[in-house]
Image 1 (tube, chains in turn green, orange):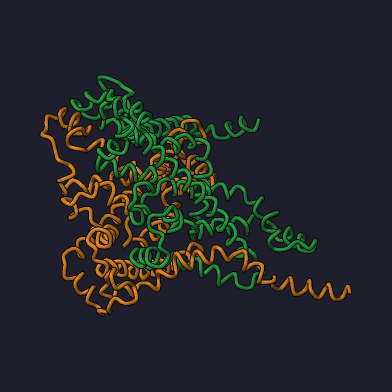
Image 2 (image 1 turned 90 degrees about the vertical axis):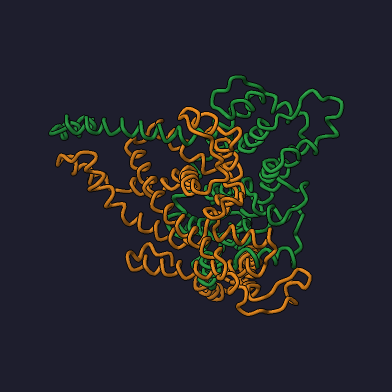
Length: 311
Length: 312
């Protein structure tokens, strides 16, 4: 009923406006369609390349429509994949442990900052905020982690430096607490005799689930995609996650061969399809992201919007 | 008894007990102190002739020697120029792309198409630089790359050794940057457009304004504050570059340094590849200080333009 009314009101000039709006929608669809295809093309190329027959690759190079398809690269990876599985395991471990610790200490430090009656909230906010303004740079940080804390070539080198507790996430959570959790709730819990720790874990943290989802997502992505920490702090390949294994393979495809040489003795069936294997490794590296993407996109977009509003 | 209780309550409403709250904040405070604050004090390394043998404390001081040497090389000018110019290009072109995408997405409204387009455009942002380097390699590597094998053949042109020709890289890196970030940047503009009062458009269309006129007369002027804020925030980071884009995507190719070296890649190479810790620390401090000055100035500027949007 309401719709027909407004449509009736707009009837003046509606013929012109609606065709104009329609045309603009058409243009939008075409332009965005082209951009979306361009966005997906590189991903499609590496997926297709990973399923391309090695001799075809050698003759024609990477292409979107290969002459001959093949699953050799994946078969090879499954057969000789100890190095790959190990790296995958390390990436999964680092992502899970890093995200858990990060979410815990980020949501904890944000809580006192959101309490209007916390004496040191402004000092604490500045302490956090200043890290966004100034940093000591890579060299002092590298010296501290390697010379004082000695984390080189350990799993901690992949978890501790840089990503555990960032100002951006802290403010994201702080703002959520401040805007979405009523003071009265905390006050009534206090009157009931609950300690601050109880209030935090029993009331605040459960209520913060939406924002916890967002920062978990950001943090997990950071850890999964990180290769910089290992570049600085890891020299022993057994600590490489999937990203650093990929770097290593790009530099030297032989590495995969030598790592699996002992397993391959005698079989000899499949020679190393190096061009296809490279790309199949990359596909394996983005697989978890592509799989969870449809479910998490909502939180991702929300986090970006909220985070951009104000630190 | 009841008097006593109300007394306590009064104190509580003024300030909560600090101890328990500080305890909750403690792990985070400790982490930030270690990860962020200790390195701030570590900037003194830029004034030392560091050697691993002697360590952090026993390496001798050498005043401003590191800076002197750094600025005598042409590296300093090249890396600073590259960092700033790339950032400027990214800010201008990135903003144009982001706003364009946002306007088109908004025009399609809340439909399945919109969701698909936005998903596709955002997906590249979730890829690591290592993976992106693989994709670029699939296109550009000289033996088996798609461009040499297919596009150049179609155009009837000679193969190009892309990873050896530095002239192409400002364009390649800008395209890669846009591919990864344009969709992401458009999120913020899309939110800003969604926040514009619909009645403004209704009034405009009643007055006979075409869609194009509405964009240039309504949408863009109303987006101005968002553009200013986003731009100033980006300007605040103008001395910092995305290490992955400049290190991983060009495959660390030495032939390309003239157009791919930024302050961040220089610091990495000085520290990890050349073992020139002093010089690397000097470049890092140069970056941190300039970065600090410009971010504070950018914020002062935002505050002048629009106090609500100032960061601090």
